[in-house]
Image (cartoon, rainbow, N blue to C red; front, top):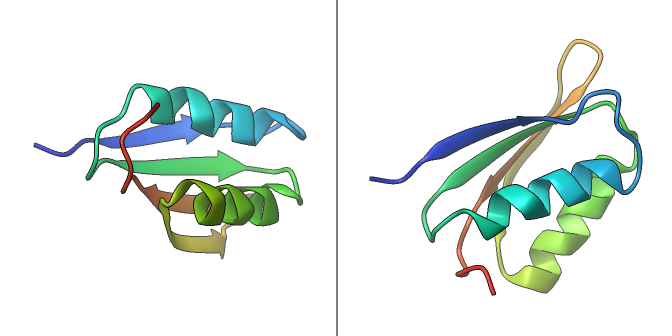
Length: 79
C-alpha cells in the first residue's frame, strides 16, 4: 500500500523544506505521496525544480492560510 506522508517545514527556510522533502524521499517507495507544508516563499520553485531533475511529480502546490501545501508523488526509487 502506498503511503501518504505529511512533512511540516513551516518556519524553516532554504534549504530546509527541500532538505526535509529529500529526507522523506529517501525513506519512500515509488507511488508514495509526500505532502510538504512550507512557509518559505522559495519552497515552491525549489521543489518544482527538484521534481523535474529527479523525475518525481509535483502534483499540486497551493497557498493555504499562511503557508504553501506542496504535494509530490514519488515516481523514482530513492538512490
